[in-house]
Length: 225
Image (tube, rainbow, N blue to C red; front, side, top):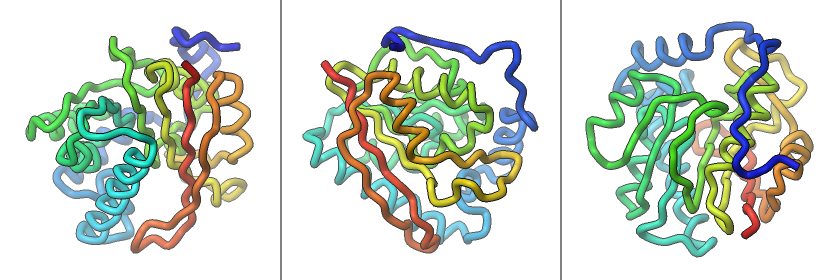
C-alpha cells in the first residue's frame, strides 16, 4: 500500500519520446491568450471558450452535489493558464493551480483570482492539502507510465482525508495511435492504480463536451478519512 505522504519520483530508467516541458511551454508561448493553448487546436477560440465553460459548469455542479460550496479549497492540477480555474474561483471556490509551463503560470497570475505555481504533476509539493484536487483532461498528456503512476500518487497525497480527487479522462481512445504528447490509457488501469493508493471510486460518468462530441469519462475518487 502506498502511504499518503508518498512523493515518488520517476526512476533513472524513465525516458520520454519528447520534452514534455518544452512542448507545453512552446504551445503556451505560441497561443498566449488563446484557449487553444490547452484546448482543441482544431476548434476556434470561441468554440474552445464554450468547451471550457461547459467543463467549469459540470465540475461546479458536481462539487455542489458532493457537498462542497463557496469557500471550498481546490487545486486544479494541470491548470494551463487557468481558464477553468478562474471560472471556478468566480463561483466562490478558493482555487490554486499547478502547471508545467512558466508562461501559462505567468498568464494565470495576472488576474489574481487564484494562486498559481509551476511544477510537474509527479514531482510538485504544494505544502498544503486540499478538500478537492481536480485533474481535468490532463493525465493523458503524461506520456511516461511511471510518471503517470507517480502523478496519481502525488495528486492523492494532496487530498485531505475525506476529500475528493476528480479526474476527467479520454478512455474512448485507448488502443488507438497516439501523438507524441498523448498516451491513451484505460479505465481499468486507473481503477487498479487508484485502488493501490487506497482511494474509493464513488462515481463514474460519461459525457461529451459541446463542439467535440467525443466521449469523456469523469471519475470521482474519495480519500478515506
